[in-house]
Length: 158
Image 1 (cartoon, rainbow, N blue to C red):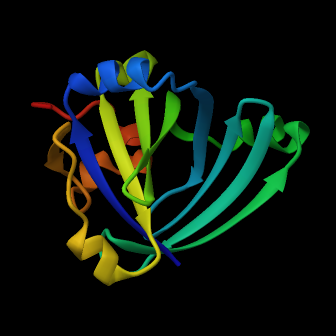
Image 2 (image 1 turned 90 degrees about the vertical axis):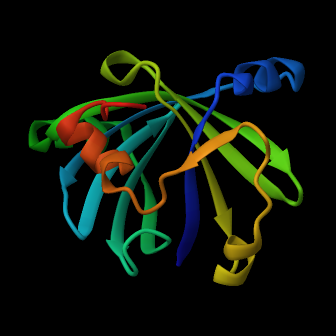
């Protein structure tokens, strides 16, 4: 079970990345199935993954099955792409016993910066103290789900 909250981040996060000397992982992902059950392929640097996620509660909790796949499987499934390919740089920032994954999107989603935090329990998710560079929570806003970013592009008014 994945328990995760998502937030839009302000531009101050760029300074935090620099001052903590965080190095990015380059991610490229695409979807072959969307909806309450989503299926995606992802390249993370030189590793490849196939992931299936199923919505449990509308935003905070999802069932997730992720397996490593080969580069060939990643490339072969590209002809089933639904929507656009998502490209982003991901930074991992330790914060209060948790890890904030900072995604800075590239290409058509340039300008979008999202922070995600995973939790072992719903109670910990509910009591998480937000850092000052978090702007707006988008955990339950479907337009910020990666599958919808792939289908509909950059949300207006970010």
